[in-house]
Length: 123
Image 1 (tube, rainbow, N blue to C red):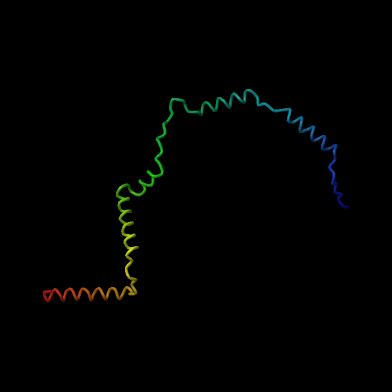
Image 2 (cartoon, rainbow, N blue to C red):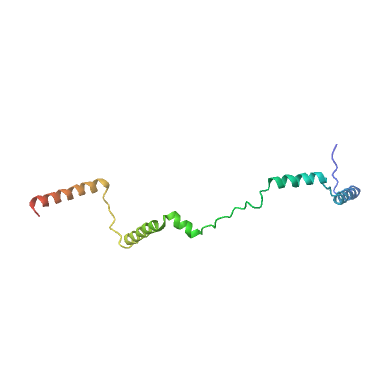
């Protein structure tokens, strides 16, 4: 009714297994010669001829790839100009604007009125 667990393995069964494994290690199966010849024949038929070797073009370096991605000299010049403007705005930070968009538009309209008035007055 209950399984009795054997904590100790059966030494005779272990010896038989060792003998079977040793015998299997000694008998290395060799494929038939006809099979090996067929495999070699198939491989040679698929292999390209030696005269059609294609030369690979040299790879461009990482910096050349980055330079090409940026757009060359024009892209680098634009990037440098943006960098100069960014540093300039960073060092000479304009006063923060508390105006909203509507007041900016209204102030701009007042400025245009002042310019027109000055032009009419001859000033």
